[in-house]
Amino acid sequence: MTKILAVRDLHLAMRTGEKLVPVLRGINLNLPQGEVHGLVGESGAGKTMLGRVILDILPPNAVVTAGHVDCATTGSQIKSGGRIFSNRGRSGISLIPQDPMTSLNPVKKIGKQMVEILQLAHTGPPRALQERAEALLAEVRIKKPKEVLKQYPHHLSGGMRQRVLIAMAFSSEPGIIIADEPTTALDVSVQRRVLRLIRDLQKERNTTILFITHDLGVVAKLCDKVSLMHSGMILEQGLVSEVFHSPSHPYTRSLLNAIPRYDQPREKLAPVAEDLQSQLIDEARKYDQQRQV
Ligand SMILES: Nc1ncnc2c1ncn2[C@@H]1O[C@H](COP(=O)(O)OP(=O)(O)O)[C@@H](O)[C@H]1O
Ligand SMILES: [Mg+2]
Image (tube, rainbow, N blue to C red; front, side, top):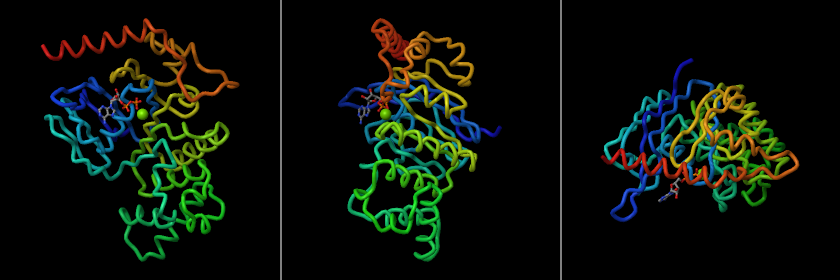
């Protein structure tokens, strides 16, 4: 399979005053064409930052201290050297964000927002772009797309808004999609339908997806491979079938042992034993000390 994204020994830190606080510590990730790769970890693990490096939309105080990101879809490369990224975003890679409400402009109609996105990748008369927007909404199974285009985001339910954002993410025919906890803010029944939609669109187009989630159940259903992340490090990585069947890291084992049941809410990872947590944080500190020697 062709490799379309390669993250090599990537180190990222956040500048706070004079200090550089490490956030990603030696990340390696290969995404071949068409792979759905789950990125799992607790809050603060660095999942969103990893997604943002790949998208090249880092906050201004982020510094890549080592490593690089190569992307075949854009031919672009992001290298270390302590510089801040261009922060312009990268063509060929789209984001499905976590929060469908704050990710849409509340004072613009859906149609206008979609046309603006389409104009970035397509040329053509406004009418053709409007028709393209309508077709995209139909593809994400929105009924009466013509009417939805004339509405404002607050007219739509959370699930509908997320469908609009999914349509926008797929509109540029991206090679890679970063889905950052795209269903966390939705009701469980809506989550299931939105996940099925993402999976169907991915299959039809053979899109590569980095799927960030708290939910190992989602990984089992959706992903080919998985990376387990803690304190900015990937602790375990492999085929979902193998990792779930015979996890090699204690952190993975502890998460799998605590998989929430279907009759309980599944938004958050189950708590990991405190001693394991502090052990992982100690290991991250040791890693930082060794790098500074
Ligand atoms: N703008 C920022 N400035 C400084 N530190 C940040 C900023 N955003 C996130 N961080 C830190 O980076 C780490 C990783 O954050 P994040 O990638 O958002 O984690 P996750 O998505 O796994 O919950 C956290 O420790 C967080 O405190
Ligand atoms: Mg996050």
